[in-house]
Image 1 (tube, one colour):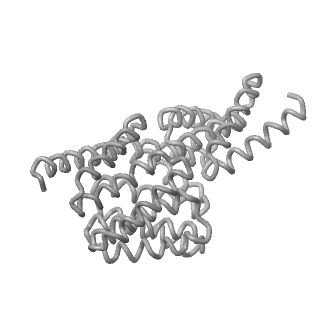
Image 2 (cartoon, rainbow, N blue to C red):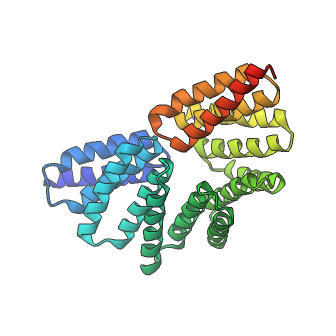
Image 3 (cartoon, one colour):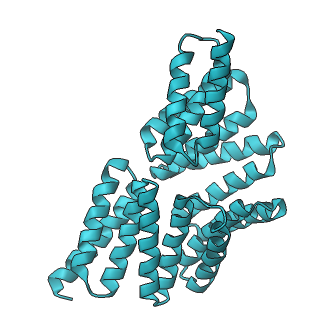
Length: 307
């Protein structure tokens, strides 16, 4: 491989890995270009592994879950050849996120558990351990095991507070708020979301801000502050649209439907839910689809009753 091409690929990969979360479309383009060049170099296992990993994470951020899983499995295969335990743990964690997003919870649990085990055995950076604990907390939340969800999020928060990483602390506070809200402790939930949002205002991407606005909207709406809830959902929708995050737009629409239903405007709620489902269907987000369909059924019943 010519030295110039070597350097070009190296730079492409470094950029792709860096931009996976913040600029996934650009990262995906860079990774695809690098992968094309690497076809002529069968022995470049490390470069191929890193490229597939960057491509998989970028596709996950873009809600392309099927292609994300395929790329991450390729990365995993290459990292196994290299016996790179930390990169294997990174990849298992990323695969777990894809599996969780597509409601394959048993498989996600195995992936996250294996990732955590690899990190702990290799004395990996504490933030990596906190990240998997955070993801396990989210998974237990989806499984409705709220005590275990809180336990894992608190463990992640403790590590992150020790490290002083404001971005990670904000994430843990947000996730704790989600669990508190599900347990109908809306006061604790709103306090956690407000703390998270205060931290996020100084650094967060539109998507990260939008997620917290959604959660804060849910909590304060449940406390009877309907108009404040509407503002949160509208803000989240705008931020998700700005980031071209269609799944987030669908979730914000579901939140707005809740506001409309509380106000007795069931026709507007129906329109929001139908638009949400139209967005969710091709994404394969089964949990969100199911929740929207249940809400739509209840809204139809209210319309028929003339409520």
